[in-house]
Length: 130
Image (cartoon, rainbow, N blue to C red; front, side, top):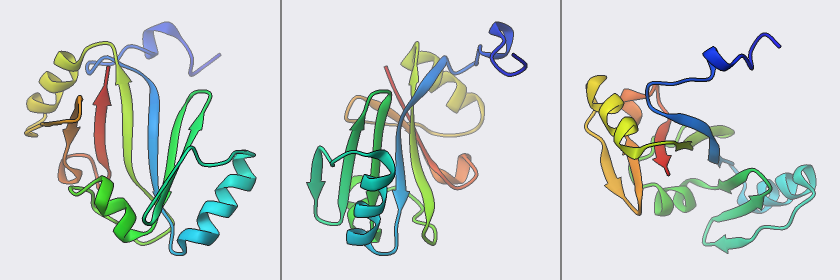
């Protein structure tokens, strides 16, 4: 009741919900298995050093350093375990872009998303999708 108040749910960047999270794991095989058990899910996509779980409310990608760098070249891969990237669904990519620019960032457009570099987001690569 305290957090989910309508006036607290409006964001300048148009954020609606979390769409995807990228997590760095030190041991890819063990991390993939551990997250699979935790989520009670099988990865929908497995690549070299990463696995993506499609979940009812978004995606979770776990990967080792090389796997995550192949997906998110601009990410700051912090020591595992750590979130290294998030994607937020927004009501407007224009709002997300303008908010990023207003905070001093230079957003990068790639693959239908607007990305903000880790140095502008306290260390985590931030993406916006429509």
